[in-house]
Image (cartoon, rainbow, N blue to C red; front, side, top):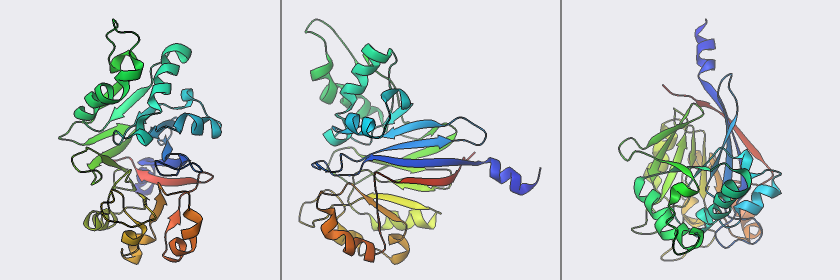
Length: 273
């Protein structure tokens, strides 16, 4: 087999379709959540949902899909616009589809806190029933030392983000060459973004707060506009407010692209070792 053919066999197709693109308070665009379809070379596609917030169940139906189309759900951190949709996912799995949804959680602490601090209050059935996360979901926690997992043959790496002080939150890097970055919620980290691009990153899906003010917990458009042109042209902005049209000319003239629900973003990524 030729060397070029061998390299081709190591490439997988990753298609990213956003179910929602808005901020926690968006009423027009839904909470930011994406469905990542991974197709390995010669293999069967599988779908990984990135975050599952308050609007995700309705956004899934809006996209013509159902919970049975989702093979696993990755949770970046424990804010409602990233996890409140899990109650429906768990109940539908248990009582309707008779199949527990599978969760991929970025560290063991978040795995514990997801049940104890978020889901337990509404999903325990009666005071005498001792439920756990396992009652509704299968799940795996990313090893804190390795900070990586594989989904359908493609490596995914997790990295800590700077969001709310002292609250664990993570972004994702997809592909063996660091091909795609999904920041979830974070302040801007210029050095890290430069490192992603230096490592061969094709695209960065970055959250963007349109207003700039003291004490913010998201990267602002004002912050992001200070990045080098080489970075800006690889960036797709998500997690924005309902007034996005007011800023469209400013965003597009700066070289950014605005993530749209209607679009599918397709990449070829390295399957790694």
